[in-house]
Amino acid sequence: MNFSKYQGTGNDFVMIDDRDETFPRYDQALIARLCDRRFGIGADGLILLQNHPDFDFRMVYFNADGAEGSMCGNGGRCIVRFAHDLGLFTSHTRFMAVDGEHEATVADDQIALRMSNVLQIDTSPDYSFTNTGSPHVVMFVDDLANCDVVGIGQQIRYSDAFAPTGTNVNFVQPDADGTLFVRTYERGVEDETYSCGTGVTAAALVANRQSGTPSPIPIRTLGGNLSVSFNASQTVGYEQIDLIGPAERVFEGHW
Image 1 (tube, rainbow, N blue to C red):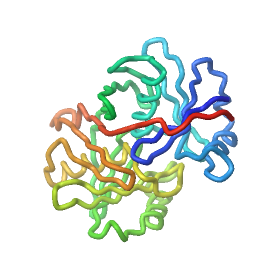
Image 2 (cartoon, rainbow, N blue to C red; image 1 turned 30 degrees about the horizontal axis):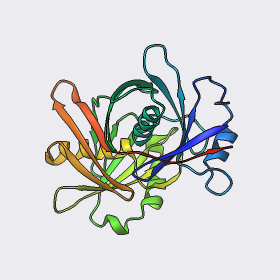
Image 3 (cartoon, rainbow, N blue to C red; image 1 turned 45 degrees about the vertical axis):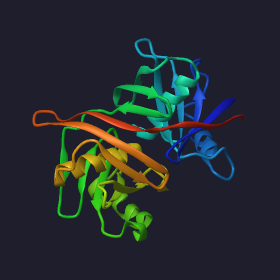
């Protein structure tokens, strides 16, 4: 099996060209082994690129534990770069993912991925919750550099409030220049990742809802910089949401 390794702001993925649909996608143990950082290739997830009759390609995403996952924003940007490297399109693409149709544009090292509309943001005294293709809790904290992201994230991820599927958890601190510093505990990886595309999208929308932070919102993660642009609508909620940032091929190999 040939594979490629891609990363987007430190969120890394095993990419497989599965247009012939020969990959054993229901072998959860194999996918988990491929993503294992000691006994496999090592990645936050595995993504299949498959044919689709009406779009340039289909994206099928698996978490590092081998289970098929919900939408992954950085994974979406990486598969766009992968498809571009394969010559499937020139600058603009339309593809199908688990949460529906997406569009994306490639401009040099930057990829702008159109995310799904967000209809609702639920708020509570301690955090906000929304779904940006994947479920996300967003919490604002004062000292994010020293926050126990894994410990607190695990408690919320496995809490009864989000049973049985759980949630991702994002911790956010605004910088002095208006940039949002975001750290994320990801379900499926069950650890902090260097970046989470759907997570920073959720953080940006919650920041706009709570304090009126205007679009586009610059984002800083452990793995690099992103930005999120959007239109706020009283009828739709949030639409024309773009997740913008770099994605690149790291290496190729044979398993």
